Length: 254
Image (tube, rainbow, N blue to C red):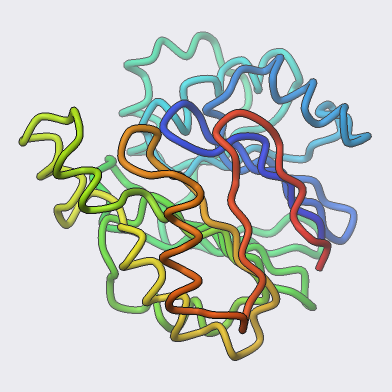
């Protein structure tokens, strides 16, 4: 299994996963041109992708799903509520939209994708676990808070993209107004470095081979600070990487 984070953050999210001859894009928050170029830099053709899966209706995850569908002919999978909420981005004409129910397991050839309902403040958000029968990759961002069942999911994973969105001190002393700070730290917001690190520490010594910190805030976090927080909790038990807001990151092959 190979994963490439094409971009990660509030400026746009898209992860490519290839396993068992199946090629998937998780989220469509970057432009079609960016996705095409960044995949081509790693010898992948976006036209060969089998499907695009959308986690929720926020712009940084779904605003370009119409382009992905029309320009490259890719079927788009998302929940009906997410699709309805995403219409505010003027998605344009779509010929191949396939709805799933949050909690359903989707199948693409030999690959299964589990959709895990989250309490994030989207219309009907999910996280993903991609399972090829040998490895299980979690894409766990925009989680809201540490909800029931999340530990069991992490315990089952071979590798994970895990949101580590903000540093509490940077958020508290940064430019965001109070209402936005409350939204980020609230039950429908994001995980802090500390929350993510505590989660990861509880599972680092098991089957997990690597973790990649994802969806870092531009204003309320830094890669160095996120890594420092996780190293303090996880020490050297697990390789930890950081997905970039500005370029592709090729994860270690599973």
